[in-house]
Amino acid sequence: MLAQLKEKGAEHILTRCIDLALSNTKTAGLMLMQYLQNM
Image (spheres, one colour):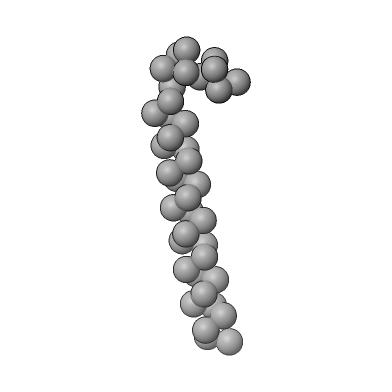
């Protein structure tokens, strides 16, 4: 799968997806922290 993506030159798309996933996870973590502090 990864080899096929690299053949098509789509590494940057994969990197973008990973960046989005990480930023979404960080945002969710911050929201969870705020929620716990408000309890």
